[in-house]
Image 1 (cartoon, rainbow, N blue to C red):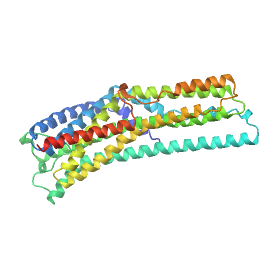
Image 2: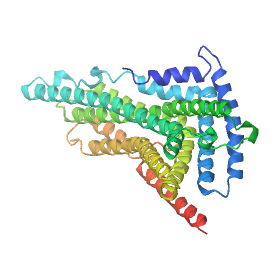
Image 3: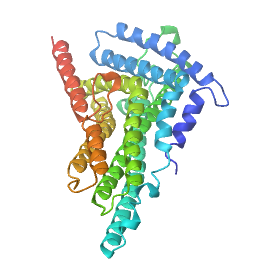
Length: 395
């Protein structure tokens, strides 16, 4: 199954190229405006009720973030398309890594070439399996979060009362709202519940596009760096180095560096906004897990906390993997057996080593590096704000 087919279809619909044109983004815009106003009023109206207040703030954060994602896909779809093109690009051709068979005609040389072919095949299989695994993990985590947010209020309300309540508004909606008293009817309740589920599903689709594109683009770069590292070792250890092959290796290295620059340029906004959103969500889920007024709310908040942390770990780990693979490439270049080799080979190795010395990294807006240190920083900031919230709420 093509892992990017879902992303392509969502992007086509959100960018106005689907059968409904720009209707999806218009509907999301209207729904966002309605939910922003009603949720903002809920923050003000229920300010004295700690649990409801923080739930409303959490919902307001999600509403604004989902709309920003939707707007980017609708009006700047080329950014996601660049990441899709990186992921869907053909895998490096086998000929690129065919290290001058004429220089390895002896039995030892042929044996080494067979081992290199097997290693390249293993790396390719591992990369393809990794794509499927990342896609499956992200899809599962996002579905669980949206399922919890959509169904938990209804299930918790029924569990607390054992039977269907006399007034449906006694059960919370997925998003905290403040509505006129005249609207407290069964039909309005059902309508808003459906609107909330639709909004969460649209948020799921947009978030799925973002995280899948960024994660798989990062792992594509890691795969190519591994293949390049193997090719460098093979080229330098050949008895008669092939200048054409080595020129291809240098060109491939330059292409990888340009690919990382493209990832930097096209995921700046989305990654920064998602970090902000996830940081706030982690803080509030942690607070509701510890200070929630019901065991059901605490369980749901803990589950969402775990899955949100898992999601931010996944794409921070993708950025960290690029840094790690670049370090391994630099080590391979530094350990090449260059003494006694032709001058052009030594000069090429020096050129590649110089190019690989600076960190190859994803750095949104040039403000921070997408790596495990960023993951730790987000968790530390969330925990700090959680402690501030607990201190203020107990005063």
